[in-house]
Image 1 (tube, rainbow over the protein chains, first blue to last red):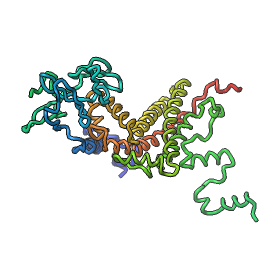
Image 2: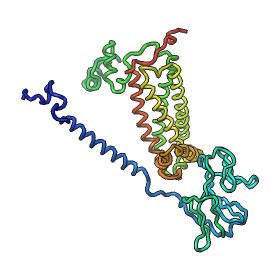
Image 3: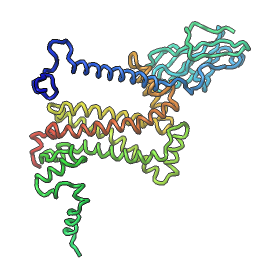
Image 4: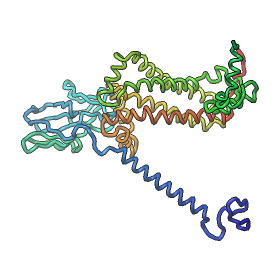
Length: 169
Length: 248
């Protein structure tokens, strides 16, 4: 047994076989660490999936805003439950988000200045959502607004549209 | 009637005592050292310290006070957990119950809140003090990094605890804070979604912040506090400066 230079416990045992390219110890190390890496990566992916909820119990993003007759021409109506402004001018209807694009505070419509104002950091927006003052990085987004077959306004907060897009009734 | 020292001596001779404390009474420097080495709760502390390092102005005990505050927060936090449900809208009612209905609840809640504020303050003060003394220099570089991690853990603990009362302040602080997170490039939106467990600060967010606040972050803190204390000893003790020698 002591003749075997690769016997375990032999102080002269070479770290790896000189003739072969990969020694047994290196091979086993690579196999085990490779398997560990694959398992680790797999667990990371599965954990990520686990922590991303598939079903959210949040209010629906698409809602009915009632008959167009509820909104007089040249008016701004704030829908508190949906955090959306329904604007109506002679040109038609459009829906603007009431959530400030700065840090998510709820803005308020100020009729005396004709501006949407954020109470947190003083951002101000025009009726079409364009920023006129404050730290907000983007204008307020416009949401898609359509008419349902039975003639009610339908707003979809997941679908943003160009500010030029106005619903004519 | 045996005298007290004789009684203690008799207890020390019992099999039960000897099974717990394998070494004899700590009367010499050697047995005192062995007592520290052989004790799980003491072994990460130095066996001896320089007298200068014990002077108030060497540390102002800022680190020790931070640790004591962490212990106070752990104990008061566990007490609060007996009455708190991390659910909407029960969380808000539980906090009101703690304030107005539960005996001594308002004391515990305020103690937890005040200790949290103080801990953030003390940890910052500790960091400034170490920085101005040059305590981050070799051989203490690694422990400085551990300290920075502990500062971040303290801030995350403070931030996750902020949501738990589920009042207006909590809701808007977390709304604004997580919107700051979402401005991170590329991954910001995903990180916010994962942290809140949704797109809004709602039930999922409350539960996630609760688990982070009560389980994950305290475990991380305990782990790094242990490393932090262990490294003070391994790096050769506290930084001592010549100015600490001056007597007044």
